[in-house]
Length: 319
Image (cartoon, rainbow, N blue to C red; front, side, top):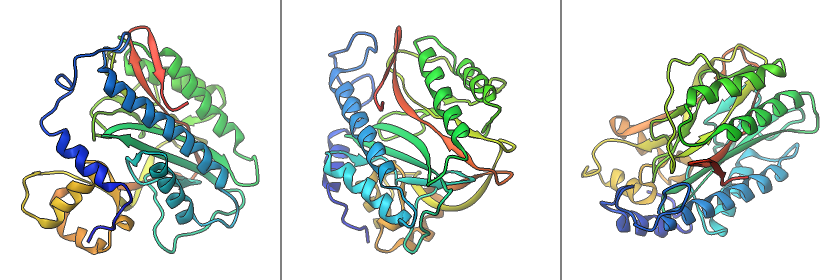
């Protein structure tokens, strides 16, 4: 029912070992600057090291004629070989597709002029690192979009410390993006993460006039991810290829329990299952991540790092 994923027994053991633990009770040895348990910090640092390496190596494999599915499976297998687990399916979003696209069997190949975003998630014992970057196949027509995303990311990271409001970070991101005569994707945000939770409630907007904002605290783990375009900056939704579990963890559904034992509450994809059609019977127990595209059909670039907030600055774990 579930494909045997190498190393998946580690997830099952981690779920059992972590039952009943909270952020406040997982340890008493704290690090200076973050207030984070030292063992948890080590998990994050290792997840970040692996994610950074996988991102760089995967980007180097992208070439005209290569299959998207081969690239995604390469990234996921490399993650396991390095001692991590995929925190979500490798996202390969091309051109106007901004996020949540993971390839399936029979998917397309890379073509010349494609603007390719590779988004990698790695976890160690449930502690997540999330990172992304963008390249163009064979050409440099969108180099300004890519540079704007990377520079906006760097500028925002340089402002992160305890007490900063994420709305202010959105203004920093927007100012940099507009300085390149590009447009921020206003429907897409950075996000906080907690153990086995990829989006844990805090959002980092990519523009300054957002109606929301949160104050960051030492020990918070956040993914900062500016998206740039020359289009409208809004999104439209497409098909669903990625899911995560919601609802009652005590459900008696055999499929639900199998998915829970393999993935906990982290996102997964149909291609990781032997019988993906059975997901259709779990409509009320699944969160769906639709493919998100730029509303006007214009290309999108992305850059992303995960950081741990400190009292005076932050620690980038995916550089």
